[in-house]
Length: 277
Image (tube, rainbow, N blue to C red; front, side, top):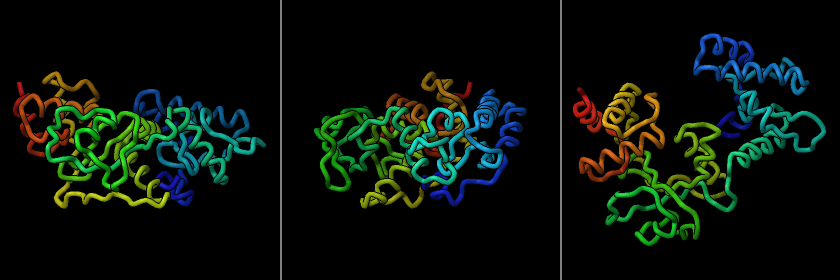
């Protein structure tokens, strides 16, 4: 709620029917926005909303949780059950609807979304997936000083490479990404939630020289990794789990250390050179 609309103060004022119709006409992302346009019409037909409610972002996201029309139809909840869910003005409906979305997306109770950790110097980066118990055995410990969870599996996530902060992320992190497919988004939600709960935010400093890669460089790396048979995802300029896995596989293959799955300008150049026919 906080990340999506600043708790309702920035929910957008675009006419979403017009926005969705435009995006559908342009076939942006295939039939996605045509389906969302029809879902918005269903909302009107069933009397869930008035025409005045259908305002939001340029891409058709509505209300405080920035639900797309299909998300409203599938997940919006009227907490008191007295009428249609009001994700524009009712905070309790907003929170209940977000919770319903997360639960139906596979949220696992009593499992953290992730734990910021300190990577032991002896770690060889051969595998980035393991159980919490095995991470503990390898010398990993939480940056907070608290014990790692007793059960569950986790992936080592280093968004700024081995020099920056690192987390052991769980399936719940992936659930947050079903709300929004950006890793940065999911990390922001997780860290903000920690701070709302009275815990610290990110403890390990972000590298001062960290700079995001330009989209064309990411696309070039994805295409090179595809040509090398290491990547089967979309060449879309977005770094996600599949891209990180492919980078890690390449680093292991050619002996780059640490194999931290982090894409740097030098690595992009090396991939371009190696994968050029």
